[in-house]
Image (cartoon, rainbow, N blue to C red):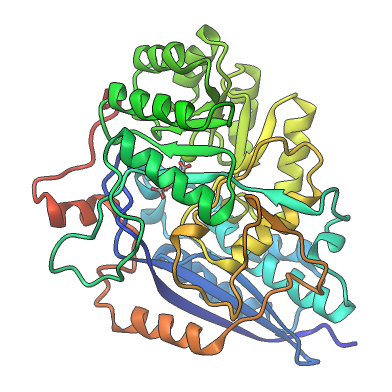
Length: 429
Ligand SMILES: O=C([O-])C(=O)C[C@H](O)[C@@H](O)C(=O)[O-]
Ligand SMILES: [Mg+2]
């Protein structure tokens, strides 16, 4: 068996995304992703997926060159290669990731976001070569299915008029009744039993009313609200007080570890984050100040599946919960998330996934949710098949784009509907 990497293919794509609202603005009609393929001397291809904005592509290209001739099993070597790729200082000067939705932007985090796509592709190829599923390569599954939560968003029925887009059949959700209706559809279509509402869009009282409506419609089901740091400490505490009896956790109510620590000290409602702890360097302060009770990992920017396991181990050590964050992603990433989640013993909260919002994919057969869960595949590698026609189609869309959609920018997408829109100052409420 020759596990030497002889070829690496990088395919940037644009995938359809519905008009989902968040505190920064609205999702673009198409969003960038990067599909990674590594090919071994024996002709085995492994696939991976990660963020696809230019700042990632410009690191992925030199990284891919350095990979050729190396062994697909040399996963630790990926981090050493990443350190050799230089990051333009303009990418990280006073920068936050996606306006802060994904926390800080550091050179290391950018590199890790690229490493993760390659790590998953290498694990897929290695698994296929050895006839073993990725979860076995990660030490073995401790569960046969991974639970996900319904990721509810306030949304418009359509993207603004005149904007090229794909239609979706979810309808609008702009008030409590709309949110409950969307939750019903999620339950009906996928069987989800826990619900997360993306908040920070409307004044807190409206979002409190929406969560109350969810609690009435789905009594006893775990609920979460995530305003992406849009609230002051005072507002966060008011929401915690009003929704404490129905929330599983409150996600990033206020921005930054000091504010989260203040909220945490004054409420019994657990706080989760994918904003103030998104790198290993941020763990010490947040954990010693008891600022968060649940860390939402994202294997893309934490540096892959094995780093996610390491994060889970650190969380376990400190008695902090762990679960998974999600951005717009396709089936390769859902498969990767499912494999690693299957190996984490201390995963006690349903993971987030945007996948139901993605009508397009690069896989031949989409992954499915049964009763809100994705079955853990025992097929070699990730257990997914790339569909080259679909990949070509989505890549062509990326090629045809004039560059406007190649960077995720929710505020710019909002300006199409509201020309004066600027990202609101924080705290917004
Ligand atoms: O849990 C989160 O904060 C996210 O998933 C961040 C995302 O960027 C979300 O806000 C979105 O897609 O609008
Ligand atoms: Mg969040």
